[in-house]
Length: 154
Image 1 (spheres, one colour):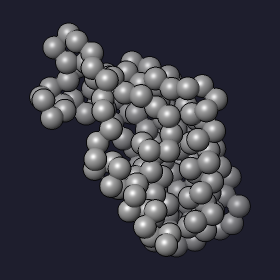
Image 2: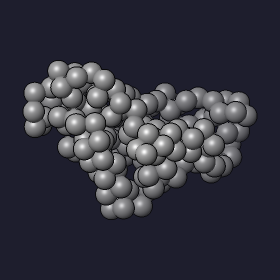
Image 3: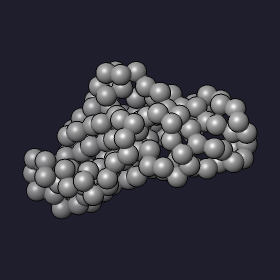
Image 4: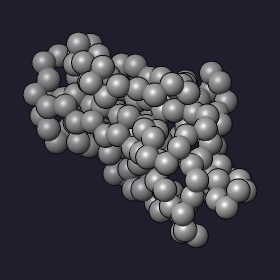
């Protein structure tokens, strides 16, 4: 398992290779997700965004989330990378990878991490639009996605 929070861009191939090399059992499937900065919000076009975090706490929360996914979905390995700082439209912002014996578990693990990340990991996003910056409020749809995973536990 590994996590990274950084201003630097990342190589999807390098992360994939690291994920596969660190598997603790044979992998029959690897699912990866790469999120990009959108160039719009509900109000129209945006000019990039900026992400802030709480150093140490953010990495620990991201690691706990990845550990939960490995345990819950019997993954061979999992990892997550999130960028911080100022990002332009279409820049890579997040990468998640899950390796498992069967594809279903890899897909579920990746979905779980992405659906839960916004509620479980302390990151704050500011969008730039028309020369002004505005903090992004949590979305009800993000809360619902994370809550759906909690209901699946019961």
